[in-house]
Image (cartoon, rainbow, N blue to C red; front, side):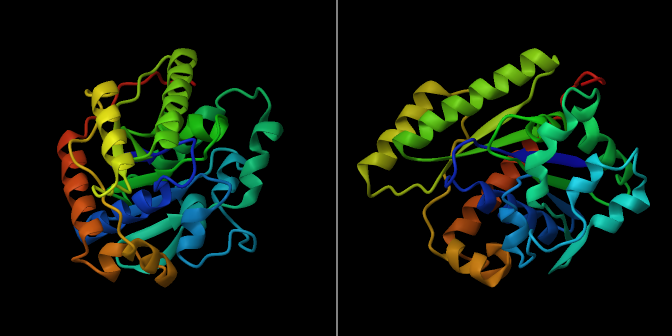
Length: 264
């Protein structure tokens, strides 16, 4: 099982689009794929027409059950109408976990342990992370083999990237593990000076972790979200999908599970 997490502490940078599109491409490739929505906002959940406010069970239950088995975990999983693609949905209750759990030990590995129980069910897991530091972010980073950080090619988004990498460094230091990550320039518009300059800044500051291509601006992403389908299933030849397919191939070739400590 390959596990990727998608994270950025700034909104509007293409985080949901990245998670959904890569998951769709993975399913197209014949890999049994699971989306895990760890964001209390439930954007990935809502993308597929599932109302986070009205569902009875969600990934929240993983933190409430005492060592859930595969049957209990799979009972939470929901199909999204795409062959080979399922979701562990989110609810707003996830936002209360840090307050509820306090300093209880082992809470950083809840998602890791849950995914290990269903390794025979899925080939690929993509986790959509919350925008804030807390138990959910720790779970997403502890579980993943690779972290994907989408960054819109504009100045404020680069500031957000700095905050995200600072958060990542804090977690790595306090939890004693390292996370392999790739920065993905998104919403790139070569007609604007802002996009060109921002991309140059990223190349200068993050040469070792920056993907060597870009995700272009593509209004078809908005239309695909209205239809509740990954863009690859909605308009498979759009330039946005072609870019994400290139990214998917890069990440699959680059994928290398990290060695992490067993106790968080």
